[in-house]
Image 1 (tube, rainbow, N blue to C red):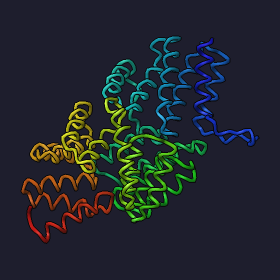
Image 2 (image 1 turned 120 degrees about the vertical axis):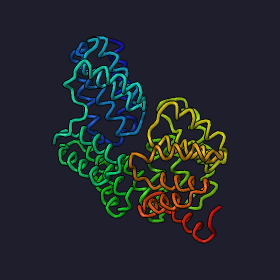
Image 3 (image 1 turned 90 degrees about the vertical axis):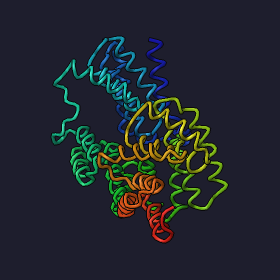
Image 4 (image 1 turned 30 degrees about the horizontal axis):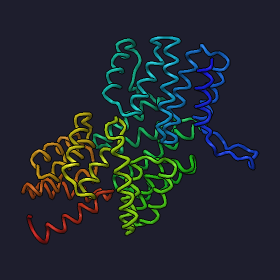
Length: 397
C-alpha cells in the first residue's frame, strides 16, 4: 500500500504542480488528461488490485506527456504499467499501452518488435483501421500520406479525425488542428496555417506544438521578433533541447547575435546529455555542428550513430547533410535520394538535395530540386531561391 500511495502522490504532485497559490481559492481547470489521471487514481484507491485502473492511469499519463511535452510523465506511465503487469501478467491492454510508451520515447525498433508480438497474439486487433470514427487510424494514415507526398489526402484524413473527436477532448482537437496547420505550412498555405493555429491555441492555450508551428509562420512572414517571443514561451513551458535550438535559430534571424550564440551553446550542452538516448535532439545537433558551430566531423559522428538507430527520412536527410559538410557528396546524394524516393515534399530536404547535386556537378538535377523547393513557399524555400539566383548569375561552382 505504501508503494501505491507514493506512486499516486508523485503523479498528483507532478500533474497539478505548484500553479495553485493560497491567494487563489479557485483551482485552475484541469485538462482532459489530468481528469483521466484523477479518475484512474480514484479507481486505484478504491481497489489497489485493479490492473485495468493502472492501465487507465498509464494511458492518461501518456496523454499528459503529449499535452505538456514533458517526458517525466513517461516514467510515471512506466511505473503504472509495471504495477498492472505485476497484478495481471501479459494482460493485452497493458502490453499494448507499453507499445505506445515505446513510441512516445522514440524507441521505434522495440515498439515494432513488441507490436509484432501483440499482433500474433491478437491478429484481429487492427492497428491501422481507417474506418470513420477511428481517429488513431486516421491520424496514422495521414502521417503516411504526408510522407508519400499526398498533402491534400493527409488533410482529408485529419479532417475526418477532427470531426470524430468529442468536444471535451480539447487537446486531441488542438493536436489534430496543429497537424493540419503543419501540412498547410509545408506547401506554402501560410494564411490557412495561421488561422488553424489560432484555433488550436484557442482550444488549448499555450499548446507547445501550436506555438512552435505559429513561430514558423511568423518566420515565413519575416516577423522574427514575434517568432522569438513564441518560441521563448514554448521553451519556458517545455524546456527541451530541440525547443531551445529553434529559439536559437529565431534569435539569429532576428539579428540578436549574442543571445543566439548563448542559446546555441546551451543547446549543445543539453543535447549532448541526451544524445545516446532514443528520445534525443540529435538531428538538431547535427545541423548545429554543420551550420552553426562549424564542426562537420562532430556532425558526422552524431549522424552515423543516429543512422544506426533509425532510418526515417528526416534522419537520412540529416545524415546526408553531415556527409556533404565533410566532402562526401557521393554518399550524401545516395542518402538524400533514398529519403526523397518515397515522395515526401519537404522544402529543406529538397534544398539539401539541390546543394549536394550542385557540388557533384549535376546542374540539371540541382535546379530541379531547388525549383521544387522554391515553389513550395515553405520553410527552406528561401534558401533554395537564394542558391538558384546564385547559380543563375555565376554558373557552376
